[in-house]
Amino acid sequence: MALLSKKDANLILDPLADNNPITIQVLGICSALAITAELKASVVMAISVIFVMGIGNVVISLMRNIIPSKIRIIVQLVVIAALVIVVDQVLKAYAYDLSKTLSVFVGLIITNCIIMGRFEAFALGNGIWRSFLDGIGNALGYGVILIIVGFFRELLGSGTLFGIPVLGDPIAKTGLYSIGYENNGFMIIPPAALIVVGVIIWVQRSRNRALIEEA
Amino acid sequence: MEHIELFFKSIFIDNMVFAVFLGMCSYLAVSKKVSTAVGLGAAVIFVLGVTVPLNWLLDQYLLRDGALAWLGPEYADYNLSFLSFILFIATIATMVQLVEIVVEKFSPALYNSLGIFLPLIAVNCAILGGSLFMQAREIPSLGLALNYGISSGIGWFLAILAIAAIREKIRYSNVPAPLRGLGITFIITGLMGIGFQSFGGMLTGDNEPPEETTPTTAEKAIEEKEIKKEIEEDEKAVSYNDVINE
Image (cartoon, rainbow over all chains, first blue to last red; front, top):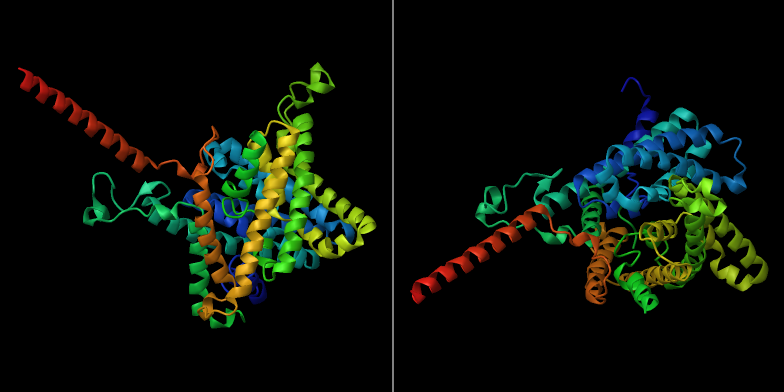
């Protein structure tokens, strides 16, 4: 990482693991859970959030000295909403089916607490370049969890990845299905996402015991 | 009748937390004690009850395709629906500020119990989600929009109340250390969500079926195969009969 100083690199790397927005900071859970039944939707959602957060953090950081602190929440919401409208229109134009699957959850990026949280905690007090890195880092941390959850739910629930069957054909009984394997329909229903995230938290905290909460 | 149906449907079947995961952030953050959970829940019911009908009016007379026709025939071709996110969130943010000021002025007691939660609510996804779902489901009248806002608020209230009560008790249980706190709350919410799924069979109106039940292509293929088999068997049976008759 010659391009980034160590401090700057940490801005990107920390949120990927030990300061993950979903599993540690508990931000942005809403959209993380509802759209992860398919890997494709998770990836698109992750990319959208990376876009909105990277640019949003830069814009807020640029304006940080002229926003009156009393109305800053409304200003922040308007900035995010404008960026999300761009994402929504692009999705509608180039990936119409996908934007139907994501339905209102594209709009809900606006109230995704990660974005507001990072604006408040970081972009309002830091320069443009660092804010940009922080935004990208946190959005990546969010995306990683989304993609892990989407991967397991689609693999175990439908036996496919990105819609391509990977475990064999359940009708012709090829691949894994020939030895009696069945798809787990439980993984498709919404509550399964919560349980998958719970297990991710369990694994992460078992590996790094410093993260364990005092009961 | 349609009011009662929408009311129960939004509380139990399309529950904000368990069916669509809206407002999870504050749901997880503020559910450590029952008393604070009640305060936030009440504030959510209130704000949803105000903002959903307001946004319904905005959608009806400003945003949807042809909504500007009341200004004159030359405006009938405009479709401003791409602006809905920004207008909805602006309405919500201003309403929350306004409600805060009004409540502080006229009911200091209520302000003391709700006050600290009101700013939190502007960024609660359940509030914006309520308005967006109202728009997506094309709720037909102002009365139903009000009903939808209040009843989804009640659904959210019930959910946060239940999880807060469970979390107060689970403190005395021996949860594996890495799962303590956040992890176990996720898993409990998942289990509660599975429980709430059973309400899905409660209403059998002519509503759209729940989204998640669309069979995957594999399942469809299996079904088609079975139907084919049945038809073939029927044909076979017919031919046997023919043989017997002959």
